[in-house]
Length: 326
Ligand SMILES: Nc1ncnc2c1ncn2[C@@H]1O[C@H](COP(=O)(O)OP(=O)(O)OP(=O)(O)O)[C@@H](O)[C@H]1O
Ligand SMILES: [Mg+2]
Image (cartoon, rainbow, N blue to C red):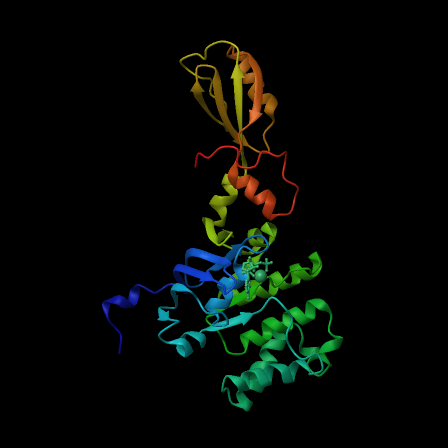
């Protein structure tokens, strides 16, 4: 029995340490990735094409061999105890990969069979999962006839058949329209609320924002940002400007509600303000303080540039990573 003192320190649902993957062709897909996902979390792994998301998920689900590093699932070392770790995991792969000529009920029951779940139990679970995925009325229809959104929900229902403690989804909503995506969010929220830890990769910031409490952003095989969704969004909501001013700045700078004002040097003022705020308020306050602005420019915000890239909007100007500082 393990009723020891360590019992209150629950291990992370997923702990990854310094994970590296170099493919045979020399591509370094992962260059030392470390992530912790807490039990019960809904965690996003956000990154552009080729960032390394599927490689990471492939390693965690034992489909890809790591080059080095450590992966633990609820404290179980994936390398040392592969089967035990795998029994805790459910995977929804990027591509739809069930047999289109089978019926949803059979797909689920047969899948459970691979995992040694007795048929009678599998049939009970299949009904539960098909109902949860709002597919019970399709249980005996040919899967080929399901809509795109239904097929994706069927993939989720199938992964849930083994009652995984950690469900990993690789871009479950890629290429599906917003209506279907919202329906899937609903399904995933319910699964998470019922206690399953979820890790989801996505291209869509909006999706991560809607679903996830924590996220890691991966780019070129490295984690470039991680933490609570809320603090990241707060960072993204701030816009920074540099004002070049006519005369030397006064010793006491004006206070502008909602902004952070700081002198960079005698003639340069740095102002961080919420994106939604009207710049006129800043100008008015500077004017009232007798500060005359000669010119202003955007501070380059690497995080923002990264996000603009991730969310697929065209990068503003050609000012990519102008400054090396932090
Ligand atoms: N089997 C493979 N052999 C060689 N290189 C690979 C292999 N699989 C992936 N890569 C390379 O590894 C890098 C990471 O790819 P990966 O599929 O992990 O990215 P991803 O973040 O999942 O991208 P996407 O959003 O397009 O699915 C890419 O440069 C890719 O070309
Ligand atoms: Mg991928």
